[in-house]
Image (cartoon, rainbow, N blue to C red; front, top):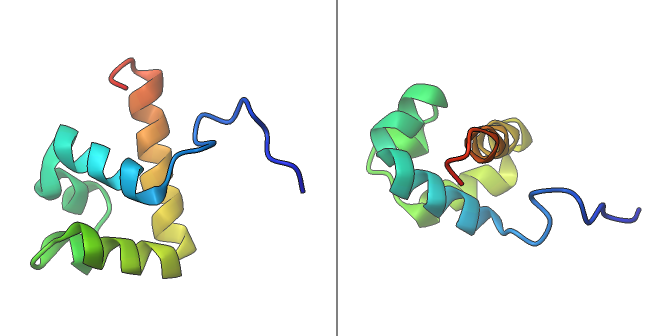
Length: 75
């Protein structure tokens, strides 16, 4: 399967996406928008990445929010 170079997520790592959203919105906003324990209890980039890499639905929500930010002109 060939990746689409017009994909706005192309070339971005999950860590970059997560770090960007944490810097823009903070852990509290992440936990409100995506209610998962790694965002609510002792949140860290490392623990969140571990969970997100194993949980496709959570990763999709995070990526969707990132794309929404880009479309709104925040990114």
